[in-house]
Length: 156
Ligand SMILES: [Zn+2]
Image (cartoon, rainbow, N blue to C red; front, side, top):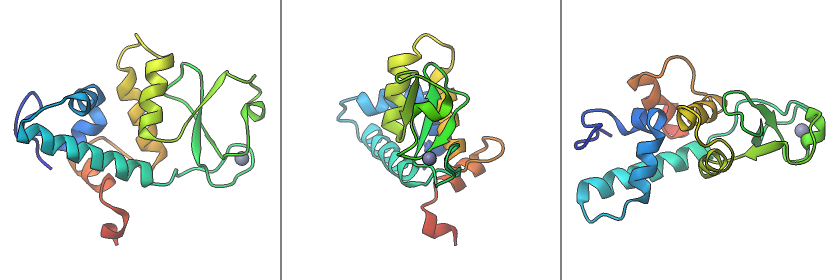
């Protein structure tokens, strides 16, 4: 949907979701009675649900089963390994605690908040990793963002 107010007026919620995660967090944390803001808040929640429901594209780096989560070396956001639920950090040659697993949007935000604060554009990089792991290809255009967030049955 198109955002009709504020700093991102005229842009779609899909592109803002992927490019401006700080704004998304601001909206989600805002207790507002203003209708415009509530509508976009609900739309962001809907986009999170779609993102979380999409399967990861890759297979586990270790056993090749379908991936159910992403493994990050703690502090990393731009590179990751696909992982299943059973393979653990030892398969990456890491000690317990050096690898952090991210499954959902909420995990991703918490991970960045806990381990990556103070780095430039860090939330953007993290959401980019999540989206690419879930099949967002090519440039981040309005059209690509729109297609990415279509519920899967509407693509057929
Ligand atoms: Zn595995």
